[in-house]
Length: 265
Ligand SMILES: [Zn+2]
Ligand SMILES: [Zn+2]
Image (cartoon, rainbow, N blue to C red):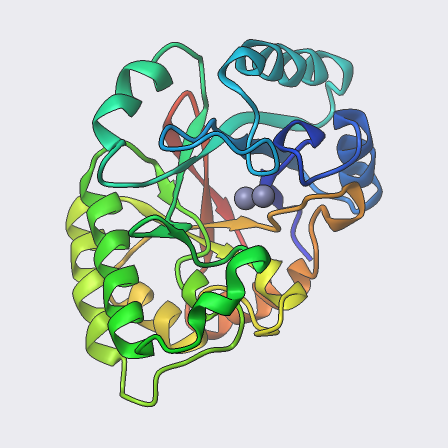
């Protein structure tokens, strides 16, 4: 297996993850990874929920700790990233805030549909009575909006809307196509995330057919576990690698100072 980099790790700061940064780094060394990138949750701008993200006051110490970790583990590539929620109503305030820090990459995520945290287990009951096709349509529309916002280097777990296994009966192919045409035109990368393997849906984000459509459009991809505890670093990367190769990917990308570099698979 090639030496890979896991670009999507959290820290205990976000309120729903655990472990010290060093523990993540040690786990990466044990798992023979070439590197790790932290991408903890950026403070939410539309609400304050200590179970979902760090506060604005904690951001400078997060940045400092990641930079210090880099010095403590010279043999490991350590990236400074951040995972930012995309909401149309707050997107305009993000750029100035994100420019305050020397991030290597900025991950955009859609976790909210019109104010509802649809992937939050606390609010899962809200799926009942919803039209799933309309929901999926709205999700992929927001993902396309996030791609076009120009704020992000990559988008996380691209078909997160399948998390709990609720799928529309209708064919969703054209939802994927419309979204991916926008992603390709925006030139943004997408994440292949093994987090879905730990969730009720039990599969990688995105699905094989979605990833094939990415490949057809030459959309570049990254690799992430979305680890919320040290033992999840590089989580089941062998399966992600097999999927990537199966659909024809020969490399993934990583970022330094917001510039892309290829990593061979
Ligand atoms: Zn999280
Ligand atoms: Zn994440």
